[in-house]
Every structure is written in structure tokens, then in C-alpha cells.
Length: 194
Ligand code: HEM
Image 1 (cartoon, rainbow, N blue to C red):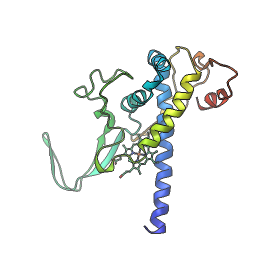
Image 2 (cartoon, helix red, strand yellow; image 1 turned 90 degrees about the vertical axis):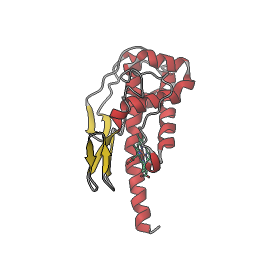
Image 3 (cartoon, rainbow, N blue to C red; image 1 turned 30 degrees about the vertical axis):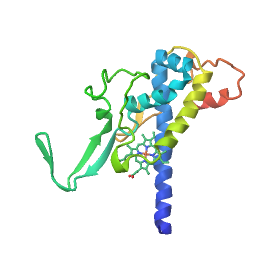
């Protein structure tokens, strides 16, 4: 691979890898703040962390859509997408399909199976998904171990665009952010992140 292509790949990795993971951590915390019973369940059974992250990915769809250009005419129900036309595939909509996800608007970390499409599908499926899940597991798992309470969180409206979801702010003033162990050295970090 030429040096130029390598550099382009590094930049792309940094851009797509950083913001998407930050957004996932943010929406994971926000979803759990908004569903205190689920937060408590996770605190009681930390082994649910991967299922909880999967449900956040489904429920929030941090990348709600991906674009494609049709390589040939494609008949889809009563419509035909013509070769060369661009389409946006709405992952966020698929992730709430009641035919695949019973009660799709319910946030449920016990949902099984959870075949969400938040990392895409096929040959272009996300290559960074393990890294994103690992980082989220570490942050959410550690914060979950530090916090207690049952006040729903609320953030300023999402920022980004149709194809990226994040939060401008998650307030730290809720009683939920009261630490279980106020003197714990990691608390400063958790407080800063929230
Ligand atoms: C929450 C975190 C993330 C989400 C929700 C996410 C989502 C996605 C989605 C939906 C696609 C498919 C795009 C398509 O089909 O057009 C994708 C592709 C990709 N992602 Fe991620 N991603 C995340 C994190 C990361 C990280 C951490 C990295 C790199 C370190 C990364 C690198 C990539 C790359 C390089 C592709 C293109 C793969 C290809 O076209 O073959 N992503 N991602």
C-alpha cells in the first residue's frame, strides 16, 4: 500500500474510530441513567455488560444509517432503485423492526437474541467493533461499579447529523452521580466523563 493510502487509512480510522466510540459510551450511560431498573440489574449482575452494550447499540443505533450506490437495478417491494442511484439504509429503523425485536421501543438488557445491525452487515461490517465494545465495557463497567441511585438522566438534545448520534451534555448534578465510595480515586474520572 502506498504511503499516501496508508496515511488516508490512519486518518479514517482515527476519525471514525474515535467519535463513534465516544458516542457509544455517552449513549450507553444515558440509556442506563434513563432506565434505572436496568442499571440496577447490570450493577447486580455485571456479567450482563455485553448484552447491555448490545441493547444500547440496538436501541440507540449510534450510526443510524449508511449510504450505498446501487450497482444494478434493484426491485424492492413496489419500488425499483435504479443503477447509480444513491440510497440511505436506515439502521436505526431496522433495529426497531417489531418483526425482529418484540416491543422494540423497550430498552431491555436481557433481550435475546439481539441481532442488531449497528455495526453494519456483510463485507463492510465494522472492523472496529471489538475495540468499540471493549472500550465501552471498560468505561461503563467501571462507572457502573461506582454509582448508585435511581434518577433518570437527561441530556441536552443530540448533536451530529442524520448519520451520527451523540449528546451535547449529560448533567452531573443528579443524585445518581453520588458515588458509593466517595473517596475512590477513580471517582474524579467518572465525574469528568459524565
Ligand atoms: C460504536 C462504535 C462504532 C459503530 C456504531 C460503528 C459502526 C459502523 C458501521 C455501521 C459500519 C458499516 C458502514 C457501511 O456499511 O457502510 C462501520 C464500518 C467501519 N468502521 Fe465502524 N463503528 C464503530 C467503531 C469503529 C471503530 C472503533 C473503528 C476503528 C478503530 C471503526 C472502523 C470502521 C471502518 C474502517 C469501517 C469500514 C469497513 C469497510 O468498509 O470495510 N469503527 N462502522
